[in-house]
Image (tube, rainbow, N blue to C red):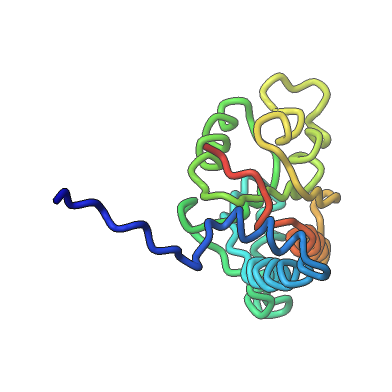
Length: 183
């Protein structure tokens, strides 16, 4: 008598993609996923941890945004000193061509999903240094992808707060569970 392996026991646990397909086929099934996505996106948006990268005079206004009068900590925006803990980078001020690889390296060290805020005219388009200066980068978006631009020279802390609110709106609208995961 030969011993045969018992037939596999059917399981009620399906792979996640199968579960998503089943829920999408049901009427109202996407409501369940959108609620989970809403909760995840709300929690990610409500606790931004930016890597503050102040390069020039805009950094003074960025620091003022965390001071007692404006207090970004009350919004859940807590600055981090290392890119490994940050999910947002705020580039404030003019960036030289020599500094560009460092900005790129710090951006690459940040975990996914990551966002960039360009604060001030210099970080956005070179500012008043655009002409007659060979060493200034003509916008930080030449090095890293920018999600929110905060205009001004230098922008006031209120403008940075508005930029952070715009980034929070963008995060809340993202399809977090259905995004393409980098291989």
